[in-house]
Image (cartoon, rainbow, N blue to C red):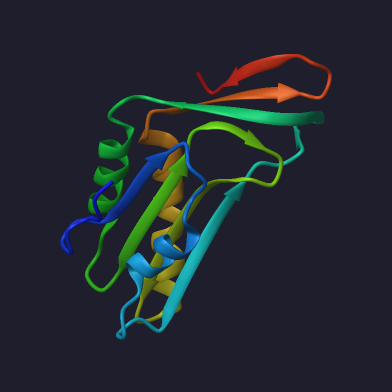
Length: 141
């Protein structure tokens, strides 16, 4: 996959493990004193039930939706990047890595919080949980 042009935000949806260093590097800038990276990882429980694994499926245009979220949330002086993994994930795997950088931490924290909430709400990626008892179900459909 080609690297984004300098004017395009780093937005990836892939079955490959997330390149965490690339997400962080995409927001790096000498003028940024705050660089934050969020890791959304697969946990071993949900709603009091044991989770064994997850499957993520994405709409073919999911990366375009992710890029639109990044572009929409961009503010003057705040740099954003994100990658979401799809396919079969195990406990502890990173499903979402998002980064924000700005001159000061308050702006970076606020931007990262808005971005992650928006990704979960707007990017067409669906999660199927496989529970430890053998039952599986789609989440948030």
